[in-house]
Amino acid sequence: MKKQAIEHTQLLVLSLLAGEDMYGYQMILELARRSDRTFEMKEGTLYPVLHGLEKEGLVEAYQQEAPTGRMRKYYHLTRKGGEALKTEKDAWEAYAGAVNAVLRASAGLDPA
Image (cartoon, rainbow, N blue to C red; front, side, top):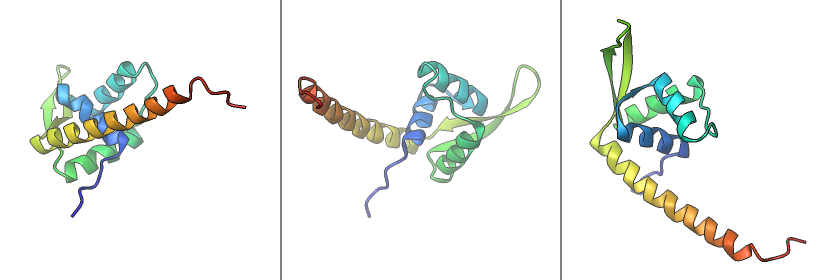
């Protein structure tokens, strides 16, 4: 059976969690910061992605008290998630490299 590729949004979320465990709103802020606001994900997009990753065993969730005393749900990258991240990151870099090669090759051509 062929392994299904993860979506690009999932790749971004896994990449965020590779550095540290995060709660949802923290991920939204960090993704916007790292992408110079190119990716401004909404909660309605993020949480279904997180639930899907959790169902696949790529992330795990746990509750932890914040400094304010409020309980927050944090997400942690599993070993399986780390392996998926590496595989998909390599695939993305190969794809981006191929696109860039085509763009470079056509840079001198007249588009008319």
